[in-house]
Image 1 (spheres, rainbow, N blue to C red):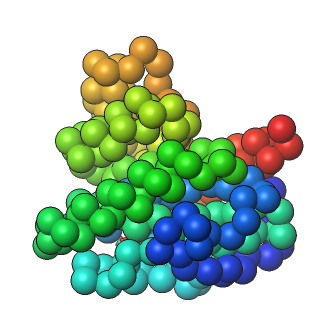
Image 2: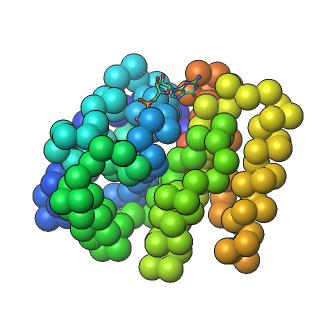
Length: 197
Ligand code: GDP
């Protein structure tokens, strides 16, 4: 898929504020610093469409971007910030759960994983939440340019083993780097396929 236009539509604090669910939608989420903004910018070939702004203390919002006038790319506020208060964590959980469980046009949630680090409890728990609530998800491994091919293969096989302790099948996996642009077309091709359904 060629990205012709990518336009920021709005920031929403809850589902009611989100754009009308009239187009297929794909959400991106992950732990802070996983490379989500960089990936969104790489996918859309824009330098600063997604801002590295959702830092603790800032309002947590759902950001909608309209791509090629035909589908929504959604930047969800990340998880795993050490410094977030209990109250903010709870508010995040409510907003995210409402979005993930109720957004009717949500086709897939891409969970971003830093390919350099071993499986993290917070990520695995997040996937379990998605799975047990029937929310389709895929995994995107980020920052692969920081690893050698062998390191990457080892990490991936460890990760898959860990996933198979919980799941009968592996989710779709994408291997990406926002620096080398590895995997960019794979993700876009998958979205394109889903858009045709
Ligand atoms: P976010 O907090 O998940 O939105 O993460 P950012 O996109 O802001 O990235 C966090 C840090 O990782 C920044 O310093 C980025 O430059 C760096 N980064 C993100 N993606 C990549 C990547 O694919 N390769 C490398 N080498 N660095 C990356």
